Image (cartoon, rainbow over all chains, first blue to last red):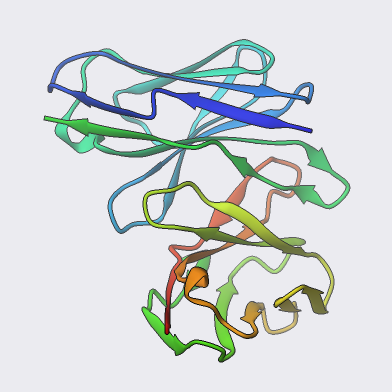
Length: 114
Length: 112
């Protein structure tokens, strides 16, 4: 069966510091990978998606970036965090099937920028 | 117009009652529809998917889809306090690109 893990689970970072969130998927090959952000009391905002190694598409221009160095590894980064970057970050995966995509989420990472 | 709309709630129902959660979507070419449950502070968990018009039942959950009217609903029978969560509706309108749009969710409170 497929599993997805992301870490760290929680972190508190000062404004202007860098960020690295990592996510890995097991039990499937060539998944589509996603990073979402959920601000307090708000919906899911798609930040980045990837359909293959090195292929990253950005949905929202901002100070975040994503990379996919391996087939089942997805990394979210920032060089300098802003207060507005605080939120719940979710890595997710899917595989394109005959009936579209079913998305499965990791456990999430709580980021507080202070 | 939002692509996927849900009433934010909270929707309060007594224990044992039927909870009805609704979702409308704007893209007529959408083919796949999903319901996720998200407990406070946790990540969303897939509970139902539906692709064809009509009803799909899984235990106490029933998903209903009406493509002509562009709505999808989730019924929870015999609601339990453990069903208290935010329910997210999601629509796959990728048209070939892997893009699923989520609603902002409806908060359900089941009162013991």
